[in-house]
Image (tube, rainbow, N blue to C red; front, side, top):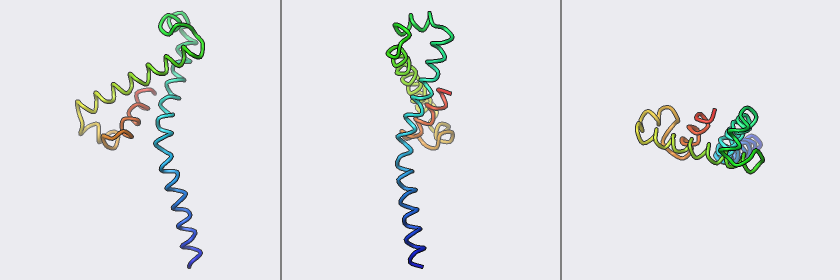
Length: 108
């Protein structure tokens, strides 16, 4: 019985560590999606991408990512301000994590 309890406690500790790590990956997920979108834009429309972001190198991609994330965050905050109850139902609340979930949806 003691081994079972110790095993259950160890499993609970591991699961809680994974749960705490999830919010950090949510932000990285939004940036990763934005980076993919920017790379596709750079490949399909190089002249327009270069004009908007000042080149086609990695610095230009980072400027694009920053802009995409900023726009997604602004859109989600606007949605949350306009319809808080509908936002809460769709994204599971109105917290920072809900904003991150919304941002991932916006960037997909």
